Length: 472
Image (tube, rainbow, N blue to C red; front, top):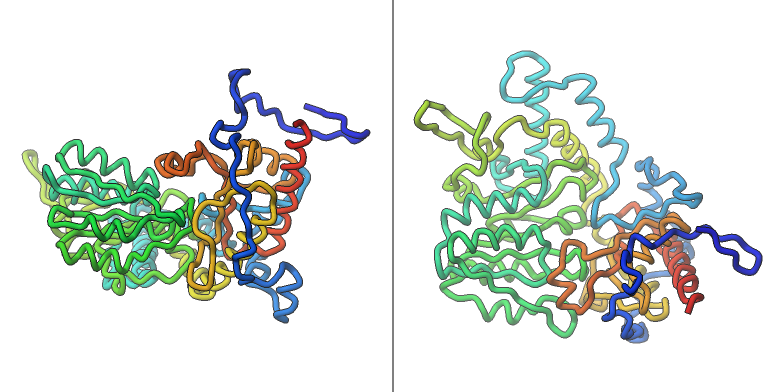
């Protein structure tokens, strides 16, 4: 669609697909009623200003240093320089990961664990080396505590169908929060329907974070499992998982941590946490899609029955029964994602070369700058806690703008400015219902982003809001 405005031609996207019914409003009623304008006066100035701040430090930021390693970031989208702010959904891949994948397929592509020839032996060595890299990255006590899965979703399902069905019974309780990803809720709904176990959900407190005090209070002898995120993909909040794990263990319960938004961004030590299970995804930590991993304490994994049946997970197969391999092979039926595992290993090498504490420190600075910058935009509501000297946010902001649908915002940002953000419920519909909205927009950063990216996003967002408000 073309529109003339003061003699200037603008190309704007068609939004008919967003509202098939003419009577449907582009903005959900709950948003149209008006959201409070955020006041930033009470937020400490925790970050220096954009380019000036970086220059004042006398050195380039981590974002500037690492950007050359990511070819995809150096392109134009719809005539504008790409500003990629959808990292909570998936991260970009450095050259070293791309080369590792290419090298596998060009020079030693073969199946693992099955052949005696050179290519198979080489592939097996590299595949198992990747497992050791994952184990070292999260400080597992041994590599056999790492099970490769297709993604974190499959890893949670593995625990649900293997450990859950074998250990939960009628009346047992599983504790979660309303802020969990669908992948951490749906498998346990299925298991509870089959076993009679009860799911108990902790809501948010006045700061829009899961109410940890209420969570602590509902622990009982009936509690058998706690399933919680480490960092929320919507609220940007950190849960005190170390405390939660201690409380759970006091009553004899196990804990599964969804670490998809923490393992890529900070130091995670499973032995220090003493968690029973932890899951993460490769594609959010500079690795390929199609692979994730489950960490499980070795004594737990050894008691769990297989999740899938077939090749590789067996010891011996007879016509009337089979015996099973030890973990982790017991849970890796069939040909695995070999190249993807090797690529994940390369991603871990890359992240480790930078240093996870360095990444975390830089992203906290970016997180504060993003939050403060977004606060300057009129009629914006940001979800989750306000940052302070003691309250840290992850480098993402989910938000809504009064009277403008988040999908309209995301579409206009992409087509007119080349800014990539996410819109929708972010696989967290119960959380959005609790917040009283149908959807939100989300800008999420990684260590290769810069304050200039944030500045470009804010400028584009202001332009987007002005555009839609011009029709009122």
